[in-house]
Image (cartoon, rainbow, N blue to C red; front, side):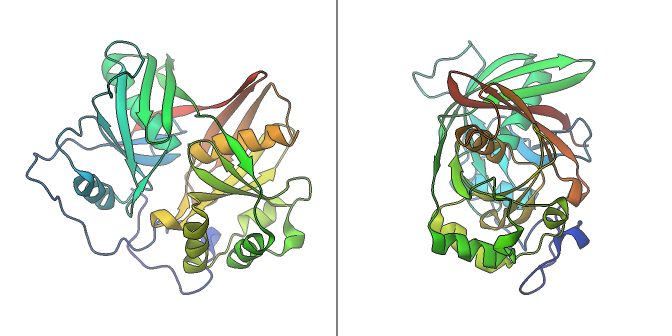
Length: 322
């Protein structure tokens, strides 16, 4: 597991020197609020075939009988960035027989509308039990199809996002974000305009001019958290472009009680929509996003864009932990 109960230092926080600290203090441990039997809680990593890489997620394949407090308690106990909880599909959900589900996502602090890595982790867990193929999830953000394949013993899941969009950020809000990150505006890549991008959840996209800037990440946890709550952001998607289709990314996630998310599928989908809208990549493109290297949990996310289809596909491998 990659959590730590040690509080981050006051003020700014050199993450690249503290790779073992991924989570902020979880606070008072939550407890189950109903008398429902405790379900089996699985642990999977997403966007890596190595259990020590990628982003770990809790997966509950049968959350029947659990209320919001129960799900939050399990997520807080696991202390991963998110955990996923499956329920019966809502009436009218169109999907293959026996392969459609309702799904909800909880961080250690709150419910989130969509989580890409927990979706991939859940799809891999299901594929191990019912085989590869098409899955359909009804998420709080909308319907998300997932295609699962297996080759050479490695299971890969590719989700298709909800309809994305990109919006401007006010100058004062951008200035506050940069101040919280301790990023001078001159350290931004001018080819990448700062924007808020959505593909199931809202993410502020900021591009670093150099890999050194991205690696030397420092931020004021409380200050960034306050701004993100005000703007309804899930993460800040920090990006550095290595080549035409290869990027390195990092995602502070203080609103979830997490200092940094190791691999973020929802942000990858949002970034894909953002990059296409500004002509930074072709309408038909396959992008590779490397994330987690600076935390010692390397992962790889594949973002696929298709001309004529505004939705974004995000895929990667997954593996069970333990």
